[in-house]
Image 1 (tube, rainbow over the protein chains, first blue to last red):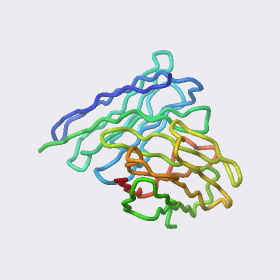
Image 2 (cartoon, each protein chain N blue to C red; image 1 turned 90 degrees about the vertical axis):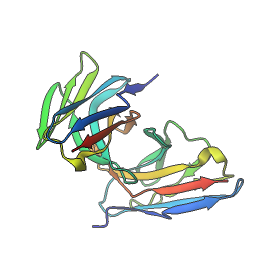
Image 3 (cartoon, helix red, strand yellow; image 1 turned 90 degrees about the horizontal axis):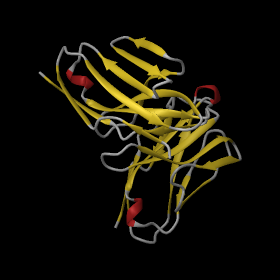
Image 4 (cartoon, helix red, strand yellow; image 1 turned 30 degrees about the vertical axis):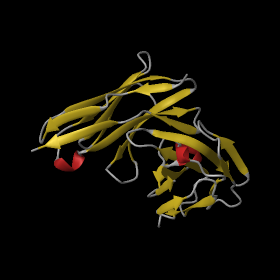
Length: 109
Length: 113
């Protein structure tokens, strides 16, 4: 079957760095996306990796290793507003996304 | 640009009733999607469409139907609602060449009792 595994919860303090891991077992893999979802809100796109390596977008970075079927989202200089759920999603054959169950990040002061 | 809009925001249905969830996008996106999200879970793909007149099943299509007569609109039909369909429904859209970056509507919170 197709699945993505990520930790269910992560906690951190303001100003810290946190890494959210995602391992995947999917067919027709094109790349790995990351989405953020605040409580009661809609998912919003953060980052995408089609190739191995690190992609940096401001305080957020995302990494992919195709050989290890593994990726991570790195959040730096954490702020309270970063408290949210983060989902990795596998791009299937370039047409649809398969989502992981999400990681809830709680940032405390 | 309004982006992706969904109506209604909330709805309570009785078992066996039917309804249509509306979704409209004004970004001229080719691809549109319907997901459901149960509490504490990720999003499950119900149906998707790669263009007007073309639809395909996702992971959890049973109990739902879709149509796509225009680029802008992608309604989701629930026939004979069941408690298992209690969920939050999200519509999303993307360009053909960037399906990894989807734009989501605000969601419809549906309760079936």
